Length: 135
Length: 82
Image 1 (cartoon, one colour):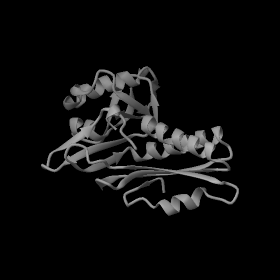
Image 2 (image 1 turned 90 degrees about the vertical axis):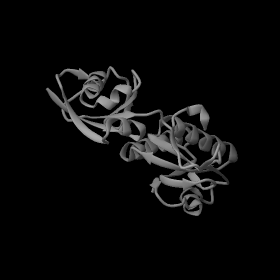
Image 3 (image 1 turned 30 degrees about the vertical axis):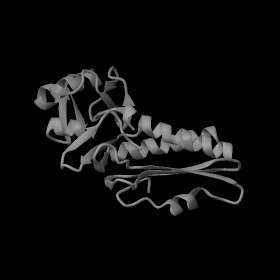
C-alpha cells in the first residue's frame, strides 16, 4: 500500500484518513518537474527498509499529533514529468495539526527514506540525483 | 569469522556490479570493517565515498556500530525520496 508501481490514488489515500470528527485535511503531492530536459524519473528503493521507515515516520507523526491520521504513498519505477511520485494526506480535527503533520511527514521522508532517483533526459542520457538541495 | 549480507542500491549497485552478496569478516567487526572488506572484494566500490551512508538490518547506523554473524549491511547512496 505504501509503495506502488502504479499511478497514485489520492481518493483512496483520503478515505484512509478522513472521518467526521476530523475537520481539516491537508494533501501534499510531489510531482516530477521538467528540470533541464528531464522527461521522466526512474525511482528505485530498498523496499523492506523503506516500508519499515514509513511505518516509523507515520507512527512518530501520530505520537506528536495524536488526533491526526496521516497516510502516504510513494510511487516507484518510471514516472513521467507532471505525474506524482509521492502523496501524503493528513487529517485532524483542526487545520493547524493537519498542516503540521503533513509537513513533518514530507520532511522526514526526504531525510529518511531509502529511495533513489535517476533522471532521464530528452537526449537519451540518464543521471543519478544525489544532491539533496536539488529537489 | 562472521558472514554478513551486503546490499547495494542505485549508483552503488552499478559500481559493485551486483545488488546483493555476502562477505566474511573477523569478529568482532563494525560496519566500517564490513565496508573495508567490500572494497577489497568488489573493486568497483573503491569509488564509494570514504564514509558512505549505511543501514544495519534496515536501520541507518553509524559506521562504528558492531555487526553480528547473519546481519545485513546496506550501502545507501545519498537519499533522494519524495
